[in-house]
Amino acid sequence: MKKLSVIYSFRNEEKVISELIARTVSSLVGIGLDYEIIFVDDCSTDKSEEKILNERHKNNRIKLIKMKSRFGQMPCIVAGLKYSSGDAVIFLDSDLQDPPELFPRLVEEYNRGFDVVHTIRTKRLGESHLKMLLTKVAYKLIRVTSKLNVHENAGDFKLISRSVVNDILLLTEEEPFLRTLIPWMNSNSSVVYYDREPRFDGVTHFSFWGLNPFETFFIGLTSFSTFFLYLPFIFLLIFTVLSVVLILIYGFSPVLFLTSLGFIFVLFSLGIMGAYLARVNRQSKNRPLYIVREEIGFNEI
Image (cartoon, rainbow, N blue to C red; front, side, top):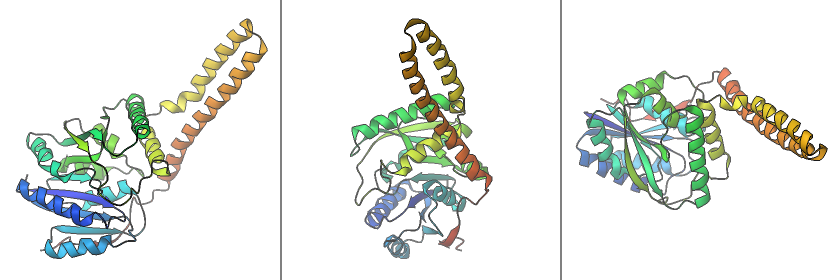
């Protein structure tokens, strides 16, 4: 490897930018490779851009992509991948919960011949037990229904080779879910374990009870599995058989209760089907994944 690209998708991270860049540069210089640091700004309204440009005056390997509108984390990462020029690319969150000091270990695994290096969080400090439990259930559900080897507690902190980057850029999905897409397209992978720290400063932009975690969960769930499309039929068979059995044994009242419960499950199943149809609807519009307003630091001689 001659050059390494690092991608940070962010929005309103002025409180962490300086520390993030300092630790990133320190880690990259220690590796001894040529590098570039690509920041993809998802329409920040604070002084994040100003801080990045100030740092760029000191280090022209720092580059900036500014989006025209808010497109979300995954489209911003894909934009960073398209503009990257490294032989390998690392992408991760910009809040310093994922430590840049881990970069040398990822590069070491790449040098051993792996195209993908996942990071797996052994501890997630500063996060609630409820969130941890629900996250574990979500990973297991995605893994079982999609039949993909998706590592539990492996988030959006990975190293991927240039060949994997090129494969990702061939995709035309409206909502690319890289946590499942990367294991699907490449099995030549390794893992690095680490303890995830609490957020360095500021407040998270991904509230657990907000839309983002649940939307992300359903995107991941529907990306590679059609299992839930069959749930209404499965529930229909189960509750039909149980209703007949209860009629023969207990009479009418339990059947009424069971029928009500069955309607609840069917409605839940229809909701899941709605999630699939929503993805089909968005994909059918064939809109661009992102639109760049400005790029700074690219194509320099």
